[in-house]
Amino acid sequence: MSAVSSTIVDAAAALEAGRLVAFPTETVYGLGADAENPDAVAAIYAAKGRPQDHPVIVHVAPGAALEYWCADIPAEAFQLVDAFWPGPLTLILKRASNIPDAVSGGQDTVGIRCPSHPVAIALLQAFKHGRGGIAAPSANKFGHVSPTTAQHVRDEFGDDARLAAVLDGGQSEVGIESTIVDLSRLVTHGPVLLRPGHISAEAIAAVIDQVPARPDAAAPRASGTLESHYAPHTPVAMQDTATLAATLARLADAGRKVALIHYSALPATRAGVQLPATPEGFAHALYAALRAMDGTGADIILVEAPPQEGAWLGVNDRLRRAAHGSSGIVHGLINNTTTF
Ligand code: TXA
Ligand code: MG
Image (cartoon, rainbow, N blue to C red; front, top):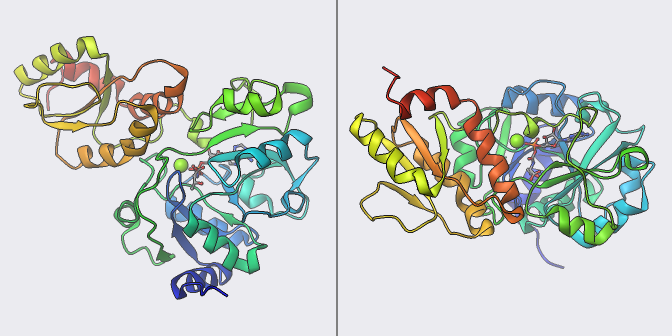
């Protein structure tokens, strides 16, 4: 019998006692609570400063019974579970009647996923003997950049007394949040891609023979689909490779301090960080880079816009949302009409 570390046992006990535990997943770190304890779930919302009607994802152990959590489960859900779990795919399904509606912000659906990070799996197996569910949004304040290291979580929540432990599992491999597919309205609307991620629409289509559609107005709400989300405090702008140099020159002329995130080879004199030029490498490093650049005191974070190809969909989605809220101030900075 392999010994489970006391850290994991303690963390599982804290969850069972209704407290919060932050834990690593392969996508980003989660802020976890017992999904069947409405008071514990409410503590997540309070700690994050998140609106009460935003649903959270329920994380389950490998081999967990979908039927316990979900109702009216279509065959496609089991096909996707077989193909991608444990892994970065969240399914939206009808919620089983015994599951408190606190986890889904009052909606009749539930978001569910089985993460592949070994620490997350160990925690899920220790918690309620592997039969519990851990409700966990990303472990960041509402609207802010998701954490991909334990230190990021500590930076977000400091010594918040609600948080019993932050489990450290190193840097999250994938680096952006899970792909979310809504199967709750399959018969009438087909599968819907609520949030793009590492598992692509094409990979999903290859399993269920239907390409997930982009969300329509009636699709279930998802906070990660708000126009402004995943944002650092510093204004963010995306610039095509071709216009990047000219924009940098203008900002320098105007005396602006720029933090640059790029993937093309640029002259070494530029202050900033170069990320890998692959969608996987870029996603893995993106949030840590945004946080690091946010801490430099720069006036603006300039990001070299990635290619518009399908494999970059998840990264482009996160960057667009990171930049959305600051589009006005960025326009002023680049055109030198903003004064401080
Ligand atoms: O990779 C991930 O999914 C990470 C890790 C921790 O697992 N979690 C994560 O959680 O990104 P969060 O709360 O930051 O984003 C979850 C997204 C939100 O956009 C939420 O609205 C959506 O999932 N969601 C959860 N349950 C849902 C439901 N029943 N219907 C529609 N959207 C739902
Ligand atoms: Mg989030």
